[in-house]
Length: 186
Image (cartoon, rainbow, N blue to C red; front, side, top):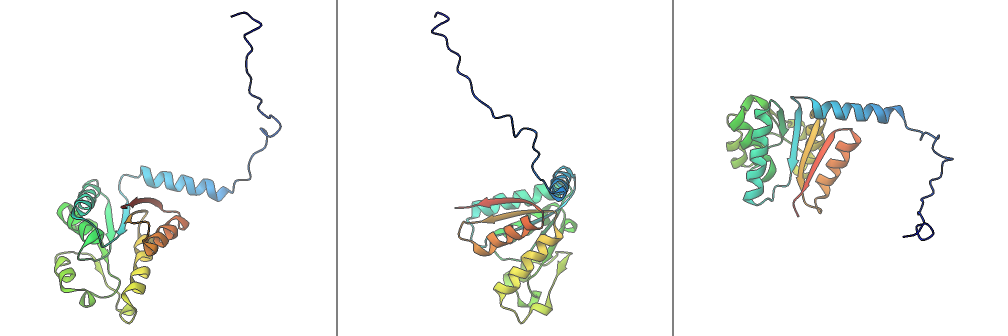
């Protein structure tokens, strides 16, 4: 090609705004530093919540995840549940080290179905809430999810896109500057 045919294309980059620094709040930098420290921390408190309606394969994955997190030295915080995310989390953590599991119930053990009561046998750290015994289970569960999130440094949530309660729990965790991992199962 001749020099006349070779025309370099150039991209024009505006230079007048390069010296501007966006007005970042110092809190944002602190939040990022805290999140990075949490991720890098070897042992942390991990809150795990999620759907009750899960296929057995998803429950097995959650069970293995909870087991692995506890073996790495983490403490798992979850709620009671006869099926789904909470039950799988409890099974995995109990196999690894029961002392690294905290179960926060929305109400009392006596208000749980018998299969949940059976599953909680041997769990050393159970927190009950008799003060919520007059609340509906749905309302008590929402309060319980927030308590679980507050206790953890990180949230792992298993949900579908239609899980409004769990979606709001994720928003709450993000607003509380927790490290959040959401697994959408649909």
